[in-house]
Length: 184
Ligand code: NB4
Ligand code: NI
Image (tube, rainbow, N blue to C red; front, side, top):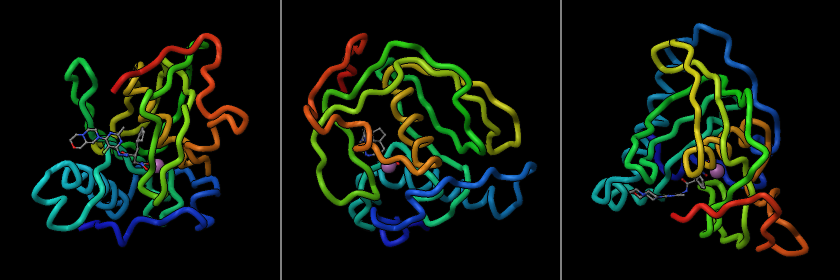
């Protein structure tokens, strides 16, 4: 099983490089790895397992964070309407997005960043993502608010972007125009 020792931390170049497209259909090994990434998230949200294996809780994980420079992400969370999102995705791509933006009022963190970085991380409020799922089906997901934020954080990792790259250096708590708050 994946534990925190398998999570690459900032400073490692794999977190700053573009990850490679996964040739489809994915190999059995790539599918197994993506299942492991999803299981890590489920374990990290289980109090007993998380305590036993000292896992930091996560709602998303990208393959570069386990040292694998491939375009694969896992997400496992409920949004505020209690809608469950639990996916392993290959080659996720944002095919359209709103002009309006949003941000988590509590800021963001990252399993690859062992420090607090205060500030708002403005992201698109609505996005449409196209990808291939663990059953090799093409999926198209329309996401907004919290769900859109989680997917953008993960897809950023595939492009070598860290959450704090979006935080204004001048004023970390600057709220750009046309931006709505996303309260956790
Ligand atoms: C990715 C998220 C940071 C902001 C918002 C949140 C947690 C992460 C990073 C957007 C995406 C990991 C991947 C949480 C968490 C809420 C739901 C359910 C019960 C505990 C869990 C805690 F753990 N971020 N951690 N950070 N990243 N919410 N929740 N709760 O997931 O670096 O690239 O279990
Ligand atoms: Ni992250």
